[in-house]
Amino acid sequence: MIQLTKLENDLLTEIMENELDGVGMGYSEYDGEGISNQTKGVLSSLIQKGVVYNAFDGDDDETPMYCTTELRDNIQIK
Image 1 (cartoon, rainbow, N blue to C red):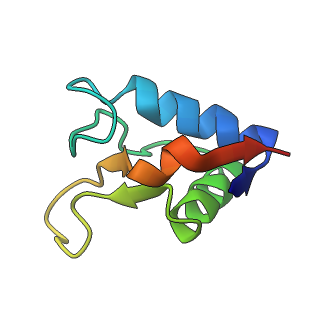
Image 2: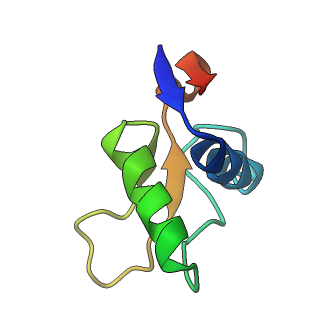
């Protein structure tokens, strides 16, 4: 079970709501542009926990596109 803070859960929910073709399907409108430093830290934490990934990781020419992984189904809010 992956434990998430309220801030992590709120951001995860926002990312999931931006996955227009279904959760975890590899496409999202959430790019993380213009977010606060605090939110950047929360996003980094979600990536480290394996719940979110950048679908364009390694492609420096593309704007990030953050999507959820199947681990999103195995979370618990602290």
